[in-house]
Length: 191
Ligand code: MN
Picture 1 (tube, rainbow, N blue to C red):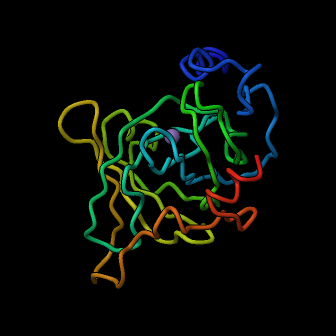
Picture 2: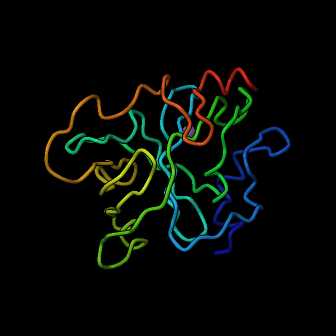
C-alpha cells in the first residue's frame, strides 16, 4: 500500500484549500527513532489526540480524558484515521465548518521505543496489544494500548507500580503547547 492509499481516509475527510492541516505531501525531518505526539483538540468535544509513528504514518487514537501519568488510570482511546507524519507539528485553528473544526495545540511530543509484543509492533496493533516507552517532554515511561470490546475501543494505561499524585492529566484548557508555550485560548486568539 503506498502512502497515498494509506492516508486515503485522512485526505477524504479534508479540503486542503480550506484547512491549514498538512496534506501529507511534505517530507518530514528524518530520524532513526519513531516519534509520538499528543495534541489537545478543542473540537465539538474537547479531547486529546494520541499518535504513534508506525512506518510512514501516525497511528492515531482520540483520548477523551487524555493520557495519564498515573499507573492504574485506564483511559479510553478510540482509533481515528492514520495521519501524515508532519501532523506532529500541526498547531492552529481548523475552520469550524471543516472536519475536526476547532483549535489544536501540540501538548507533548518526542520519541518512543516499541517494547512489545515479540511478534512485532505492527502485528501487535493488529492483534490489539502493544507496549512502548515514551520519551517526551511531559510523558515518560512505559505505556500500553490494549483493545477491548471488539474493534473500536482501546485503553491507554501507564505501566508500573504506585498510584502517583495529582490528577494524572492536566486541565486541557490550562495546558500549554510544548512547541510554543501557548494555551488553546492563545492559539485561538492568534488565528
Ligand atoms: Mn482530534
